[in-house]
Image (cartoon, rainbow, N blue to C red; front, side):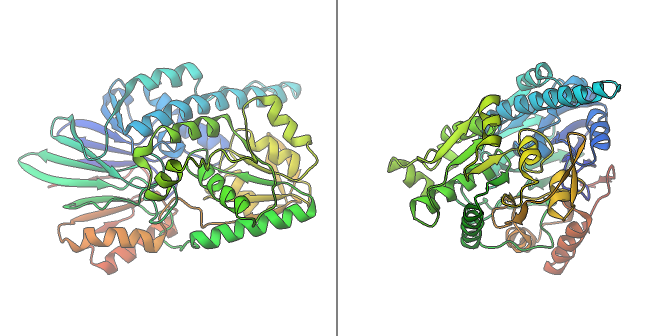
Length: 467
């Protein structure tokens, strides 16, 4: 069996790993690469393999850095099944159509600006029609069910506890008279997070591909995160400003809403209006309501009590462009939660353009900001940042809370992987989906646990296993 690491190798975006089992090719993930605009466009548009040769695809979860380039995969000639949990499939319906709409809208907006300067228009990465066509390829599989995806490779999903429908991927391979199990963690969740169940342990693993996003960092506790959220909102409210929160529409938005509900109901926060300004987040929240099979005990109990943390009295969901624009001229303090989480596209760009120059406001980051994204530039202290091709002064307060991360941190990842190492079957480990320092740090920690052969692969590196 061969593995080619076609994305998220020493980086955290564009997850994509190509397996070859007895000549048949299976793609794990097909995510969007995010970073410098032109580089991102070229890498996303031009796949590093022939899509027509891929027989099947496996998707661990719906986040755009794992699923967002599926329309290009299909446009490029892929004609196989895309295996995912039913919750992931439902999320991808909303997310890929939203991603295409954003691609088209942003291209039209930038083209309009370029036209005034006598420059040619830009093309969207993919269109709504191409995104819609890709949805026909999805095949739903539930947790703990097994299905053959190509001859010699049987697939099983187990709960990863990361976002709704997220899965740890197990591939049981029989090839050339040998049998072995490959585990791909996808993105690992954290124990004790609200709404979703904890990650489910896996066993009998021979080869492991693990994420390493926070391989060199620890998170604050959930209680500390809620306390920080309360402090930031109260201080901004006293200044008469707005809190702008760039948040991923899947998972992070719902977790922030969940905590704001508790903080307002508990009296920690004033009764400040909260706006979720993302059509995708609105749709995703409805999808959350459709998948109680993914909930933990606390969330199940809340719903049984007829308490809806996604619909409390100060919470407003905005869908139309007119409603979104109205938030930018509204004078009173409020909280605006908008996508994308790394400030690379969507309505958050308009809110930043309109609010980042006011020192009364706060831009609050609650998720990872990849290298070269607008979010990383703001978070690391740039005084002027590019938004829609123009430079804007950063005068707003900039804050960050890492306790809301849906990724396991260094210790949580090691706690999960320790039992795999301790079983004694593990032959080789590959650390992906992390900046180089984070991947190398996790790799060394796994060696310290007793893992014998740990590699941090380079982009496009190919290795052979099971021989």
